[in-house]
Length: 266
Length: 266
DNA sequence: CCGAAAATGAACGAATCTGATCTGATCTCT
DNA sequence: AGAGATCAGATCAGATTCGTTCATTTTCGG
Image 1 (cartoon, each protein chain N blue to C red):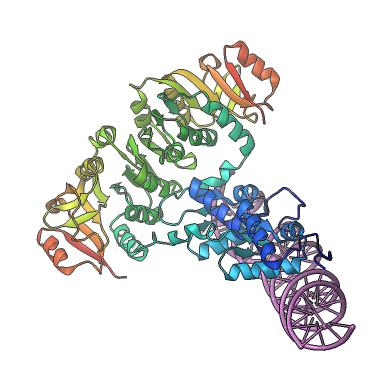
Image 2 (cartoon, helix red, strand yellow):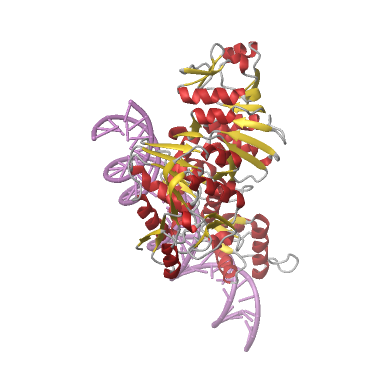
């Protein structure tokens, strides 16, 4: 059923849908099948067929879970699926967090899919200096000529594509920026931000220490959760950006400890 | 029965109807057959006939379900696979270069699409330590748990996804590994390896300086070419991995300067 | 007024598109 | 290395659309 509406809407033909798919892939470098299906309002089967046709024309490369640009650049295909989880909340949080950034700022961005989404929103800013230990964040900004991206050195932690270890911490030592945008696996009022990995926690601490203000990006699934290692105490957190499904009581506790709340409406 | 009046009302001629169809398509970009039939007060069969005639004149494109503007969809078709060039050579070179790596090695890998391909071949090795300034190389190894990947810090150079600048060079300063696998844009016997960018050249020099032996990966399109900035002189190069389409005379010259040749058969 | 030619509309079978579901393959995590 | 989850491919069913043929209407010329 192409579109059987009676009046206002513009029909979407197969060729047009494929064109749109191509544009999406070109814009993001790599897009998951699920995202594409949602974007063009079709089933995954149909998108899969379109991708097959487009691939046979050499216009894109197909991978497990999605498609990428043809050529050798942009090989982040296997990490794309993770992004699709609760993407609505992530997207809203990223939007809201991006409004806390001003042109000319120097900021630190930590690893995580939410911060990656946040980084994509930064491309419209100018004269930005971004320090990060996340390869995904760096790639998200790679095509923005007006943003200077600096990566910390360090040992690569494969699953999250972030740099950890003493080299990473050392390269952050002498740094001082306005705000740090970091994420984590859990956030409570008692123990603050926490992650399950020691090395990641150490770097997160260094990231937070390099900034005057700490901004935490955490969707509602992380609020009230406690992971193994504490990275930043609630007292050190200046801003929290979350979505409106977060438990109210925890938010109130955090607010009592001086955390300014930014709640995105889904 | 288009119009049964005898005099007063204006009948809708075929040419006029087609003109109106064209206007509708031009105004909306894409219109479904059903909408068109309703708009011009004719049957779908008639509209279909009109569309066929208009398409044969090149005034619009016909699709399943309707028609669109011509040329709008195929405007990107010229992009068709110009990137995949010499991928067979790259692959063969990468295979051969990977055979120069042994388990337990510590190596340095520079940026480039060929070295990226080379890095993919390393995943079957164990106990490897890889230092790189290329995000693509790092990602290629991210899923290999038996390989320790270390990234240099530095400023991100977007187009090639590599880290450059003083921070990158500094993090390589105290390093000493067995072999460096680097690439470039040109290689001659006189001026050695060269690239068009100064910052990239500086880091390449640092990469080469960190290794006991320098291995250059360069397909035949780069042999005999000279780019702006010299990175490594021919005397400093210990191995060259290339393909059998490389010009023989240049290879001989390089061999005379002490470069050991590894020529991949395509 | 009548007949031929063109155009329009209706109907039927064929082709196409889309989505659901099942099965095998691939990937990830433990 | 194996279990579980996810994804790709294939087949089938439903719906829509297309092409063709045929009947009807309209137009034009004699």
